Image (cartoon, rainbow, N blue to C red; front, side):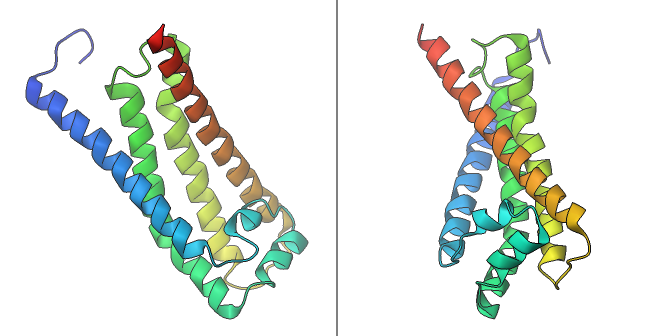
Length: 172
């Protein structure tokens, strides 16, 4: 619909979709943060465990109940990644927030959150499999899992920086 005005009803629907996906992502994030808070070391330590040994050191410090708690969060985390991926895409492509930025920055903003969500899904899938049983013979999958987590966090940070840049330029 570029170049044509959107009907008023369509604009309201987009605003509602941006708000709903953003609020859903925020609520899910808060819920999962509270659910995972008792884990020591925290879930973030597991995300960056790039070797079987490092991964095992985290998991073996958890009780059986802690490991079950971690594994139980994965389905809800899948809903979270869908929500934040949709929110980022809609915010970047269907609102004027990123208008002060150049075309490349706007395009990057449009795909940063969905790409982060895709890497999050890879990480979750690997964590589901790697936490189901000891799997020391596949070191490349631990590297892949930590790499997916690293890329996810880099993309989330890039999106946040693009939001701040758009807000700063919008004030000028």
